[in-house]
Amino acid sequence: METFLNAGQKAIELRNKGLKTTFKSDNSPVTNGDLEVDKLLKEKIIQTTPNIPIISEETVNLNKNNEYKNFWLIDPIDGTKDYIKNNDEFTLNASLIIDLEPAIGVIYAPAKKKLFYSYGNGFSFERFEQKNINLECKKKTKLGEVHAVSHSAIPSNEVLKIHKKFNVKKFVSMSSSYKFCVIATGE
Image 1 (cartoon, rainbow, N blue to C red):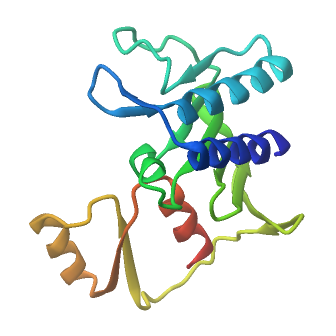
Image 2: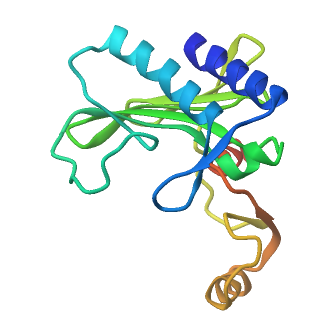
Image 3: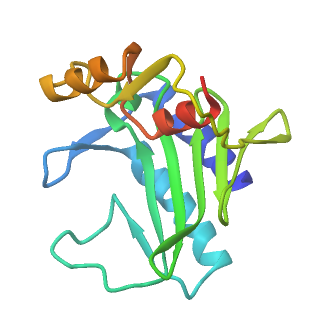
């Protein structure tokens, strides 16, 4: 967890100093913050689990199919466009995949100072002020007020039909994996 806190602090520091942005082959932006966080996360992962390969969004070979069953999957900064715009919903992400199934997952929103992690089957937590809060899935028999969270600021006609079907009362647009944390915490 400390690695994520430190990498998040570094991402904020670099953004405050002014980011250097270039573009990947798919024309998506990548900043010196993405690359520095990528480096920090990889260094810790290699130190901790040297025999498990790492697949990173910033360094993956898109022309090669994944042949690993066990690997680390990282997106050092998810929501790079928000990161560049000084918005606070960008996240740092890593997941340990064992036998092609997620075993451990971490999402950290450094600008919001919110860290979420999960392991095993159904164990999910939010770390808040040095305390771990269990995010239990609550089973409900009735559908209450429905809120929708999506990447797109303007939902498609198909999505609007689904909203109408489920009587969605509130729609929120979020660009990074933080939206899944918002759903998990019931915000």
